[in-house]
Image: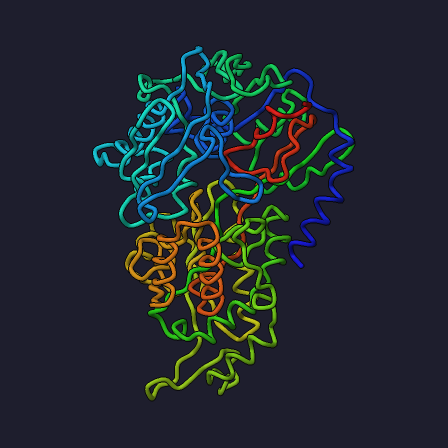
Length: 516
């Protein structure tokens, strides 16, 4: 049903898109930026600058609208030795923007540079693509068009293809600022002091030239200034994650297009604390939380609903809508089955545990989102929902660092927290016993084995089936509650793309093909 609704919404949205003005030969884009003082494709300082880099730098693999890896600079690949060795064949006639050929040696050098950065514990920033170290142990070039990738011993699996989405630059420029790229555009000028950057067409691109000849990027030191610039038509397009962007509706001359992010909002539960170790109590909490109300009233609809760590719309998403329905009556029934009753009529559930009466009191820790002051409001709404079950919830606002200390010490009941999910669809760090993101101390031999199995699935079919089994286990065990993925908005007066999936880090994707 969810997918049907999404399809209908897309269909209904098409006439609005068609009413907007098509981009001609240039586009002025506004982004929030205060840190980018030089162009470093392997270590971008800010989120939205990645969408700009995406127009200049290309990768072996691209991820399509369904979330499937597709050939890009690589025209095909083979896999050997049970997933331990992957061989990629590059397309013929690939060139960087200066006209020099792009070879497998450049790809290998780019990949090895990322691995070197990731392994360097003496630097504070280890690069945006540092997670490749968990998938790959070595890159090498067999010849100009053949790249050999040795998988890391723990993960010889299909997920490695997603890790091949890193930017490729000339081997001689991996550690340089503003290296050449092979994408549809190249950097024209970059003036950080004047908040200005321009991209022009790369005449050496391996596909036909884009219709849009120039992309101008204006940077703003605050989201307020960015939105003001859009309102006064100083930019054609603005990228924002402000919840207030929900007020901008699509009309005849302006569009508001929702884009997905990788920021997963969750409610963590401590399995070492009574009563959260009990499955029915966790089921009751899940059933009592009206996620749609939170999304609409707090986040103003700037969310992407999901019930598992897999984003909806992905080819891997397994819809179990009936399991996750809001049902207050079911929640009350589950608690009663576990012996939680209000025996003294004080408005709080209690139960005799080890000979002593225990009230159902829970601590809820929360830290604020730096982009939007919405998590405290979310915490209060969740507390109101759980208090309908006669739970007593104490909300404690904290700094991010304070919450981190509580999580690492396993000293909490409930925590509202977000996770930045990787491009590689692998949630083992959240679900496997003893792993870094498993703060609730969830322990399931079955789930751990499934996550290990996933990391040895070489074929697309095996990978999908195992992810389905993981999502079934997730629904059964409730390691934590997925609230939703955060969303942002592309505000634009000019249509510049026809892609179905607008997503973070690739917000200009499709401009190179538009108008052909």
